Amino acid sequence: MTECMDNQAAGKKLLLADDNGTNRLILNHKLSKMGFEVDCAENGVEALELLRQGKPDLILMDVSMPIMDGLEATQQIRKFDCEASSVPIVGFSAHNHAEIRQRCLEVGMDEFLCKPIQDKAMLATINRVIGSRAL
Image 1 (cartoon, one colour):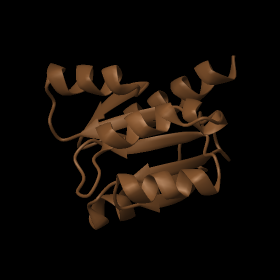
Image 2: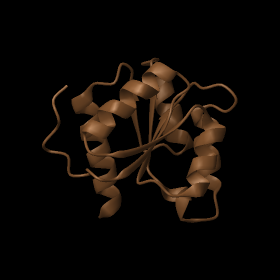
Image 3: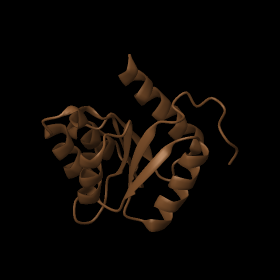
């Protein structure tokens, strides 16, 4: 992958939640090369804990994780009584069904990506979601 030169969101802090260690490693590497500062969580419970420690600019949340999945984690985040409740969340899943995407949006995610996540689509989505929140 070549570094993306059109990344308007470089330098932003992202929280990546994915139960698959290989996926976390690959996505963390790609996102870091794109200029993001990345914190990683293995499940929704860890994502909530990291979110309580400091508000990221965006969360990339796997839908299917053990202990607490991305849907439940998103619902809990949206109920927070603080600024962190409004952090943009992009869900992702290997299941490319319209129902999964719809469910993600219903629980409060801002956008959805399908695995395997393509670099250009991921960057465009991150820039769009972070940019729309900055307006």
